[in-house]
Amino acid sequence: PESQSSAAVEKLLLQIGEALQKSDAFAARALLQKALKIAPRSPDVHTFAGVLADGEGDYRTAEKHFALAVKLAPASASARNNYGAVLL
Image (tube, rainbow, N blue to C red; front, side, top):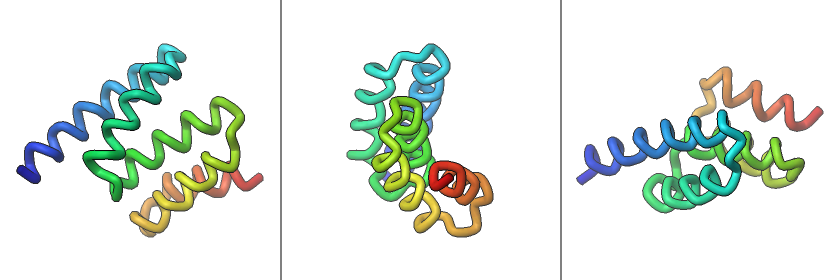
């Protein structure tokens, strides 16, 4: 079960990345909602949620997701970098 959910999240993360590269915010948002339900404590999911929100100009939501990514993965340089960038 946990390995299945982990595999499902990894697949969703790939799909979210592809949707963001295509500037398909609608698809990315739908995929993120699924990923957040499966893995609400995944720093990667929150990072993608922050990237989407930031790209849409929703800096408050981006900040929330990036801050949570840092809280969940405090040693992650990329999580800290994203959080710091949105605070500027």
